[in-house]
View 1 (spheres, rainbow, N blue to C red):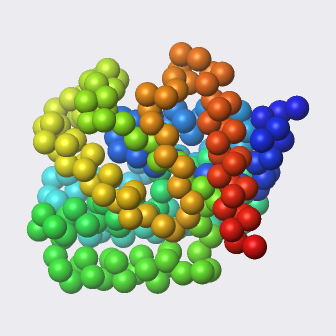
View 2: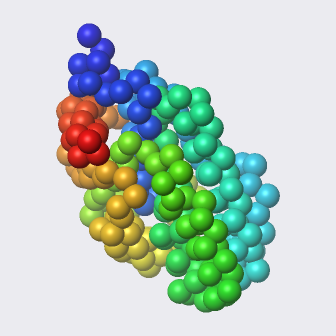
Length: 222
């Protein structure tokens, strides 16, 4: 019996992986998709026409960048559900407004009117009964020290040059965001409780918990 059937995870389930940089979202996405025989949905960065402009001038391009992300994630979410589910999704549409757009607004790199326009659009598109929310959001969490260690270990040049204060702020913003998130059921996993890179068998206890969470959520809907 495969793990999906063993733990009664619906074949059409949609599971989103969330968490700050360095927690292993992509690794978890791939591992779960392989174990459950699901498809993957990864963020498309290379084709983003605003990213380079944004890094050169936050104030001018933050609104454009967030609108682009919102449109792309909305289309991807719609496609996943039209396909019939069975997906593991790397990063959620909810993080854009709850963390990044909010951060730009609070830091003054997005104007009041742009932020209001963005949040109104987000609410109209996403925070409605008609938007297909995931069956489960898995939030990968860890201490700041653990996350900084992982960022250092993977050695990406742009991340190595980023001030530690930025990672501290992102860690705090993610924790604040998830503590108030209620758009769909949330399963929190501490990154120290498993190591799917070293031992692929550690994915099974996670899948067991996923099955329990999805079942509980569906019973509550009845």
